[in-house]
Image 1: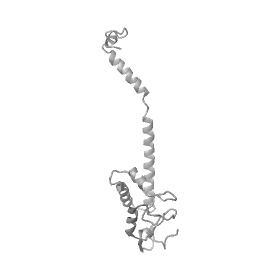
Image 2: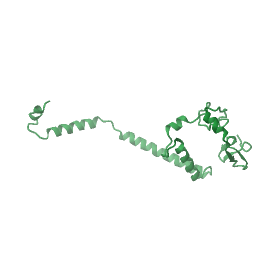
Image 3: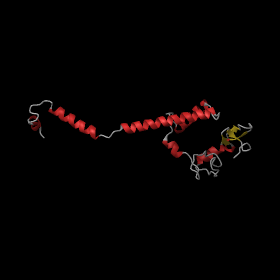
Image 4: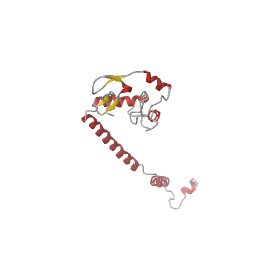
Length: 169
């Protein structure tokens, strides 16, 4: 329609509000046709609240059972957060995707260990960087007997890291 057709439309003859009403109707049609993202936002909010409850419960359980202290968990959270080089309160997808996994059980593994701590499958160095990490000997104290052993020779249990002699397997 031309401007003259708009001006001389019999329904809105000399109506100065014609264009505004037409624009309002157009916007109303667009609004009715737009998808409702509110339901998705509400579902995501509920999921986040459930995850927050789960994480809080797990932290409380670890602390109550004496498996970890709140400061230890905070330090671990910060270390995981900084794994991508940025302290932003999250684990970057790249870090998860690039993390080494066991070839047998597909769980995340420490590349400096000789075998998977979950299924026992022997680990092969995947890169020169992994082999370089292997040469660094980090010692830990066994939480049962106190003897110092290489971290790669320790086992993670509910009581903490233990040496091979104290590990029940």
